[in-house]
Length: 139
Image (cartoon, rainbow, N blue to C red; front, side):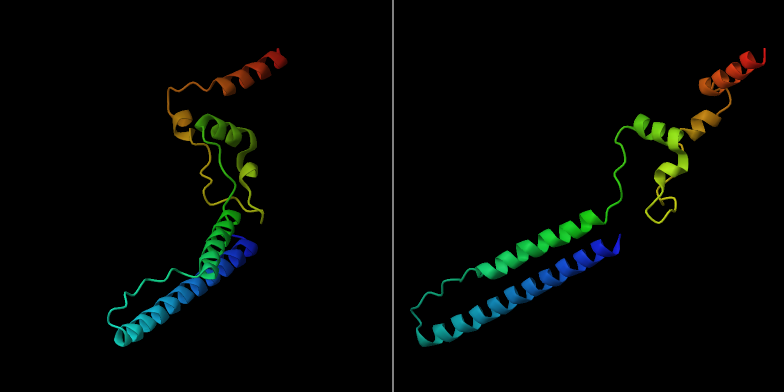
């Protein structure tokens, strides 16, 4: 995660913690108010008070900010189809999986079909085609 995404996520979590604390304080205040009112008037039915709109809005905004920070910190998406991903690995190699700092990403495992290609008895058409082209040039 970059520092911008970490900062955005931390700010969102701080807002979310503040909204949770505000909701807790509101519920405690309503409980004490209901208890004091019930002692004054026994016939009064204590209607539960809804959460104030500012706490609700703060909770929703904080959730969106946390989600934004998480999305900003995700790595580049990989192709869904294996053949597309394997083709990119064959064409670009490690250079196609460099992070912004210039290092190879952690989830780069190389060619996913490496075990199949190294298996004895498996014909590698591309290599044979290159060898044949070189042989024709030499003839």
